Length: 452
Image (tube, rainbow, N blue to C red):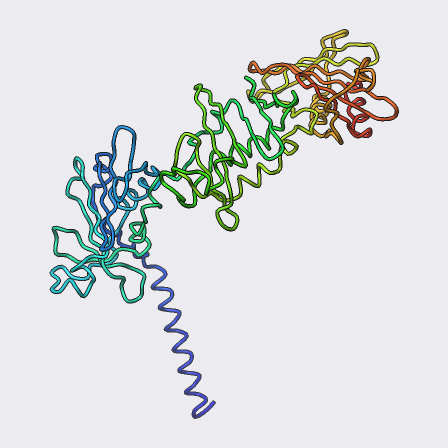
């Protein structure tokens, strides 16, 4: 190798050697620790509980929040209850806010940062937080941060733009937008008046829901819980009128829907839904208030599904681990079964099943659990809401009767299956309705319980 080619090889070898050396040396050096950023308000975590007032002043408006014995209120520009979650978010934002960069310790013209007339001024009052504040100005050229300073200090620094944006809230963002203020677990009764249909439900001590009007029949746990969840989460999108003297313009003089919630403490909440308020929105109000809100149509859509959506199509919702024992009656014989618990060698509870009458016997646990699981897999094809005599459905002498006993004080339940004219029917505890069920499912259930 001679000439230019040889020189190229030598240079390449040297470069590779230098790269390998740098990699080896640098890889042995400890990684540099990124310096933690300073908090804008050091020690604010301890001062936070004492905050009694928050003022957010902007050139066009001033928002003021105050904390009293009944919680936070928006005091200006109007006096209404505040959203506690939003207030907590503001305080958390101040607690965690960090200094991104120090621009100048002794700035000259604050106008160049938008701080001569701040875009936003945040002021706090109360206890150790008294006098704390923050001035927010313009965004930095790249838009990722905002110029800021403390009222009593000359230093100009930057904070993250997303942290500053938390103080761009409008009055509506900070007010309490809830309408019913009722937790789903507190609801004891539910009464719905809707176009062409009225129905009522009640929750029993075991937590199960049933219709009490227009007929006594079981309700489906999850659809009812979903409706209660929608009522609990109901928030207004806007305020149509703070104090409506006339409800007619909003369709609330004769509401389309009226939903009443009876609570455990004996109080009630009522939501009335009136006419449309634009695309996919409706007017609504809590019946004791003259505030008319605009709500999204999600709740209206749920209510429009009617009573049929809430009916229990399953024979029963059975959690096998809750069943303490059961009786089976079939073919003129009655058998009783009980669950027992023992510790394995690791000390873990192990459940076993036994037949206790008429002849005691140990059972295959999985076989019993599978039979109990089958109950929840049987759904009605149709409902007979005004049934005739039980004999009409083969229920005068049922092909199968199950009596289930639960732990933890949950009330016992029963169900019966009968057959007539090639069809299968069922009825259950506390239910005036007869269910028509698929023959294949009924046959499978009868075989499962008569075979253990």
